[in-house]
Image (cartoon, rainbow, N blue to C red; front, side, top):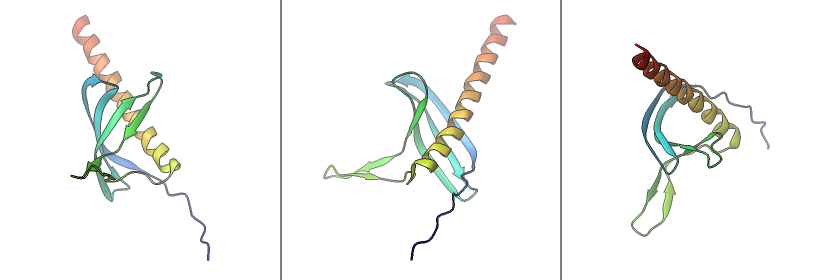
Length: 108
């Protein structure tokens, strides 16, 4: 019997972004809580090669035999997009806040 799947609303809270010195497109590490129920951490935030947008990279574990195992990741594109949009918006707000502080210091 086929059940209809309702679109689950993904709400992120406690989004923490730790910027790093950019390297090979890596901009920051991210953690957050999904729907007040599940902590997710060690997500890498990368800039796209085009320079227009971002992508998230979820952690993997590499076993001794070289096998790469996904620790966790979104299982469909809609969830991935929802998470990416919320994280990106938070990152852009953080960057804007930092820019304003730098301007205040140089103008002050």
